[in-house]
Length: 351
Image 1 (cartoon, rainbow, N blue to C red):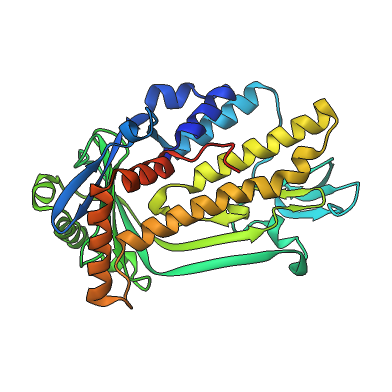
Image 2 (tube, rainbow, N blue to C red):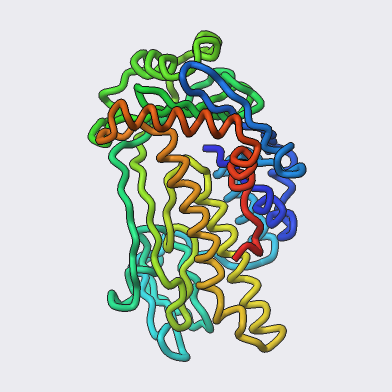
C-alpha cells in the first residue's frame, strides 16, 4: 500500500541517505478535496503552507529502501526471531534473548528501542504500574479495495462526508487505485462484493466524481478497525518505545508512519548526543518531546475522523453539525490553513 509521507518525513529520508526511492517514484500531492452535500471543495495545501507537500509512496518500497541501505552499510539484521525477551532494561546491563533456527541467542546492549508494533514484546515487558494507556475505539471500520483502475483524482486525495458514511479515494499509481468506505465494525470482507462496494462509494461522492470513477475487479480487499491509542511515558530505564509500540492513530489523517519517523528522529538524535557529546539531555527528554508531537497528531486525526465519519449515536443532528463545520472549514482561510499545516506535518521541533 502507499502511505502519505509528510514533508518532514521525506526530508528525514533524504538526510539518512535513503531518499532516492521516494524522489524517483513518489507522487507529490499539493491539495486535498473534501466532498460534502454532494459538492467537492479543493484545499490548496501547498499554497497555504508556503510550499509544503505530502508525497504518496509505497510502504513496501520504503521498507525495502531502508533495509537495502542497512545491508549496504554492513549492519546485521535478524528476521523471523522467536521467543524474544527483554532483560535488565531497568538497570545498567540490558540484554535481549531470542531463538533463531532452533538456536538460542543473547545480545548485550547499552539501550533498547522497542519499535515492534502495537502487539510487540517491548511495551508488554514494561511493568503494568509504570505505564498509562489512553485509548479510544471508534464504532466503525474501513473497508479497503485495491483495483487496477485509474485514480478518480490523480492530483489529490479525496475525503468524502455523506449521510451514508465516509469514503476516501487514494492511489497507488496512475493505473492502480485504493479506495475505502466506512462500514460497521461487525462487517466482514465476505459481505462486500465488488459490485456492492463500487455502488456504495459512488453514492458517497459528488455526482461528477461518482460518474467519472472507473471500476474493475478488486485485487485486494481488507477490513481495518479504527482506534486512537497512546502509552505514556515512552522511556523505561534503558528501554525506549517508538512508533506503533507507543501510539496508534486512525488512518484518516495519515499520521501513523510519520509519527514513527519523528520518534526515531528524536531518539537517534538523543543517542548521538549521548555518545558524541557525552550528554544525556536528549535521552532524558525523549519521551516528553515525542509525546508533545504525538498528542497534537492524535488531536488532528481524532478531529478529522470525527468530522468526516457518520457516528451511530449522533443521527441527523450530528450530520448537520458536520456539514456546518465543513462549510466553515472550506470558507475560512484560517481553518483551511490549520488543516493544511497539520496535513503536511507539524515541524519536528514542535515538541
